[in-house]
Image (cartoon, rainbow, N blue to C red; front, side, top):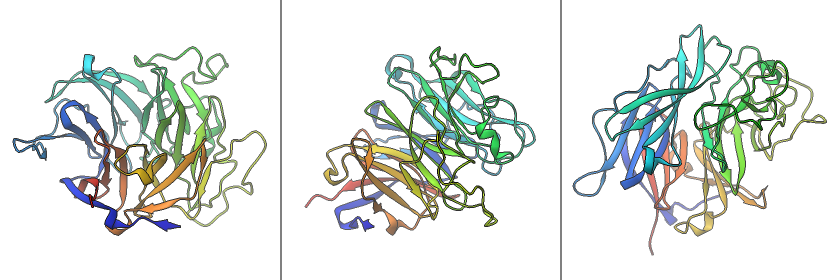
Length: 354
């Protein structure tokens, strides 16, 4: 696999000292919102000199967050009509270690605090332990919201059961209602929010030309990139390219009729985290590609897509030697990275001008 030449770009530290930063969103005026898994929302904004600076005090008004193990504050995304309503959405672990949910809330951000915090989705039923929450969100072109929910890592077969949100992608309206055209909305005993099933631990959702792509963690191998279709079954735990952490076989099957195979299977595991679509002019050699953050591999994988078909992958930013939690394409065409550590950083990748 090819690796990018670091001489073609430079990496600038935008902010540092963040406690496991998890997600990044862009606001008008060059501002950025960053979540910290411990439950803080931080604002990065231009200073008097025009350079981006991390505001010292966290954004007020964040709801109580269960922060233990893998639980915490996860995604932040901006409402498509932010210019008119000032709304942002957060996803986070809600409840206690013994009884918890993934929750999505909507709030109005006035530049200093969150106001009018309103829950839109609380996954059901409650689960125990603090693993496999998923937590990523994405807007579909019709204005509905898709939310990834992990399998909880207790009874992995819940990912195949329609009476639970565990191991699913969920779709709701911007007001938290159930869209009438959800695939299981009229099926008795099914949770009507379910959009697709058979997921282990979704870690990214990206819409490209109206098509939803998602990736998820496998166990010891079997990380997947999938093209999402309503009502489709992505197989976990009936099929997987990986084995359990104990080296036991999870299933004898890599594929089965009626189950949607992945576009890409990463075995050994790279531990994919965030993902972005890159099609800006600043890095023409990366245009038309998914950028996949990788925790275990300490890199970003560039996956070019041509008519939805993945091409040869390229390894980016391995020279940083850091776990990458999120990757985003900025309004300026630069690539932004979040490093996963107790002293995490926000990085901006800029082209080097000859």
